[in-house]
Image (cartoon, rainbow, N blue to C red; front, top):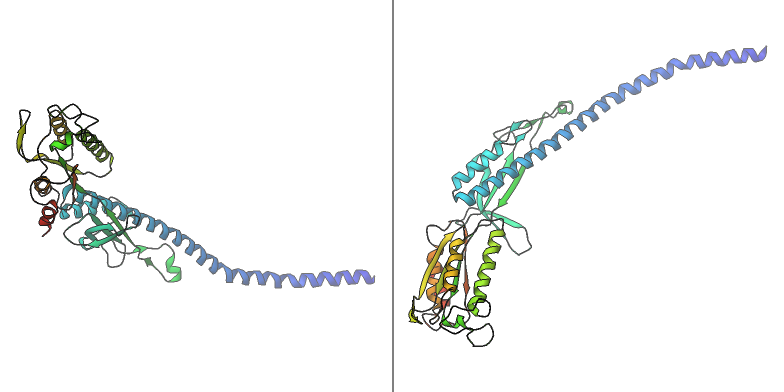
Length: 328
């Protein structure tokens, strides 16, 4: 009897506590539910922000690449800016085309301070090979800020990302200036003349033959580069005649071209007959300068002259003086 009474009392106590526990859960849910909603909103908007940043980076990079490539091909800043704007519009950022305006497109020079360092961009200047594009989705930009989905829960309605991309196109106009003086008939080792002075230079044993092989290898490397280089050819010795052949002091054998077949043809022609005369290096440099300053030369390309000779000058002025004159 007593045990039965105790059990009934315990049941009443358990029943009496249940409403209190249910009330506690309601309070807990009321407190945590807003936090869960805020965390969910934050997670959704963070993912959206990362996606928009990626899209903006892609669009900005595409615009800078298009601008730099067009600058290389056209050598025209206006055309390059138009290409950058067009490439930006082809890429969606937060569902709308990216709009860039002229102040957000800078044209200048990209160069390395050392061989292994990163390229550093300097806006403006006479030599231009790079385009820097700033992609903005800010309140003051043409496209405006990016709307958030649930950011207003935390009092933030938009965010304003910015990305900067720079593309450098290394353009170079080259001129080969080759020595066709009589000493180029001699062998690679010693002073002997394989085959004699009045025959075509030996294809492999003569100095001219070695130079011809070097030029062919050089042009083959240019063909394999990702950049588009123009190349021209000048040759030099000293005016005179020998073995029934008359030769000039210096010739422009090929003007600047992207196709190097004219250079190959001229090297083959020069290799088919004796080369002769003294060594007037300055005259060759003169014609090399004419090639690199011809209207065919690109205004924004780096100009490089590659001089090939087997010895010192014995006619004309000092080539070092000749080299310094165009820089004055």
